[in-house]
Length: 285
Image (cartoon, rainbow, N blue to C red; front, side):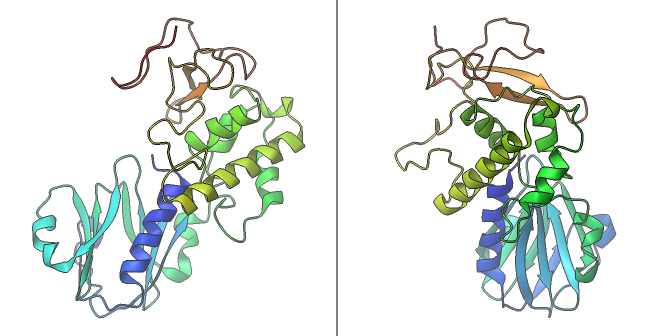
């Protein structure tokens, strides 16, 4: 699922392509809104809210979408509208005289009144990429249940919005915290540092134009400390990075960590050898 930085970049791309321009047509391919027509309305802005996208147009209307696992929004020259629209996975087309925004494989798409956006995003905690981010409220939310693992608490978008597995695994590694640590085993200062670090990394990725942990321009697919690096040596200590499930269904995820740098293997790790992801990486010894 795209994380806060990817959603922020998507919102920026849509905003730059459509904001201030009059929509000449729309095609929302979901039953509830299949007859909706946004033609004649001007795009006011497109903003992210956690992992949600809010495309606000004139007349108190917001096109609300969520990318989920496979979704994307792209902006193309309007001449490509008919060709792109033939794809069976396309869920939305919004076009001006020069541009068409194509929503493909969207996990969620609906129309709401802009004045009632709280119906779809009001449950979210403070957004780490919001200029008005409230760190005090975010901290209070995360530490409200001391029995949860810190990973589950951070991934719960009701506590803090924008963190996914990347921007949870990487700050945990940088701070030497085991992902399976219970919230009650950490100090509020540690949790606050974790959220601050996650926000810093998200902002860095937004500025870089790609998901990045180090910020280095010469790093491509391995720009991470632990996320996605299962079976490879830790960049700090050389121990093999491991992955294990965390949480319960349907919210269960997998989390990457270094057993040495982060205080031991996961309780859900069976200890069997783990191979690296992808065919271009060599397995560590």
